[in-house]
Image (cartoon, rainbow, N blue to C red; front, top):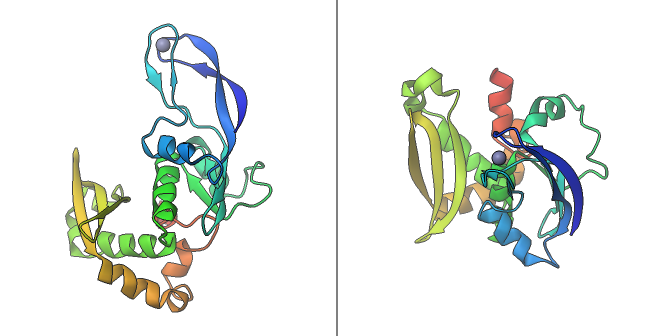
Length: 211
Ligand SMILES: [Zn+2]
């Protein structure tokens, strides 16, 4: 694992130096995957007030099954990345994750041997339809996060359907298999071709276009 020293500013107005990972290899260091999944990977503790902070910095995870590298683009760089204005992606990774939650989601998906394009298409079906019209702000703030497999069903958390509540949706493995069986054809079609193109495979690309 390679680390870089960053200056961190806490809410208590203390600033301190912390070593933050910039590159890690999942195939040699599976523990990294567990830390990413439990949310503690980039977190640091303020030496003055003891608060746990979760800063985001550019980070490359190598050795990921099926895609090679996943690159974490910090949430703060979302707009710059969408306009092609970040300069740290060289060499181009197999996948980009914008924001830590998306990184954790990708690690989970590839760790289970699944195809993230299929998962994003399943989210598309979850988040389109009449229910969306009843969501606050016309569904603009609705987002789905993949949470894994329970009793042969794929579990998604859905944020933003009701103020302050997280909904749960479960989709059958059969649904996954059906989407996966004709993924190549779907990837030629709108709207799937708009959000399933590597390296940033994310339904959030669609939300960005509506703004
Ligand atoms: Zn502090």
